[in-house]
Length: 463
Image: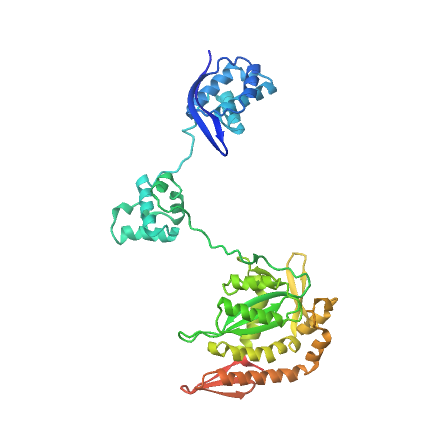
């Protein structure tokens, strides 16, 4: 006796460009005319463009049982079994793995039936009404984050006494996102898209690799501090990773236009070619104005990776050991940015690069794979630049080591350090508040406020 099954028969009747007219018909098919494996093989070859899908899973299971029994599947050869399996897969739209499991169930248990009783399921706590209530809340608030929504649900019940939220008050933030995926929620929700993370396609998120070549800068900003509602100046610190050549500039505020102008002028002061500009993800650097300026100078822009604090560690160290040490922590008004820049470009940057030694670490790895840094080499950034192999090729056109030697040898380290300190003291006398009396004593700058009787020694300005 043949087997009967209902199937959805889908066929394309006519195509118009990319569009097509598709008819879907539900047929009751009698496959009793397929009596042997050869008939199955011919059917498979002739029906490659037809797609069938059964009405229900239980109906498919019954049909599969009858097919296995009719063709005496378990006594067939391996090749013939393959034709039967393909026939079942074609008709039911089941996967190969699923058909294999059903055939095994028929062999072991003698019957194919759904395993309703053996399934482990979770108890349903939140009803369809709860999901619709969540959608109502999200529609009102514009779909907030999970923790924020949970707090609203708690307040609706505990503060405002709305009994409808009795179950939702205990929901976890994570499960709120699960309910938002359900059909009943989406039918009521008016929010068409999930919260999207902010993505700025400026800069490459990776750590630069200089391979021993100068021109790979690490950049950061140091804020001089606020006083009430008054903002202080900002210091822009640029440090080359290989030579530790450092240029510092000052800017009134960190808007795109000012930062672009200051950075462009500061980059011109480096004696070697600049290849890479690496910063954190601050908007003062990650913006279209700075990106355009760097692109015009053919400088690659990179930015720090998430949870990789060492990506910009070099310039972070210089912020403390150089800028904070010499400029301190107290408030300096923004209007003095130009005065500070004169000091930086006439004295401070020259001192840092020609007369202030830096430590260069030798990194070794022990048998346990632990990295050890040992600072055995101390050189000024200029000495480090000259010590590089074929160092001349790194210099900008029109700059030679003879010109740089003249700058380096014009003063000794101690002589220029004194000149720099005198210029710094003069700068502070002109820009710090007038009600502060400043005197020099024991190598430190002592500040006495006219309204106070205490003396406060600032170690930040040690000579």
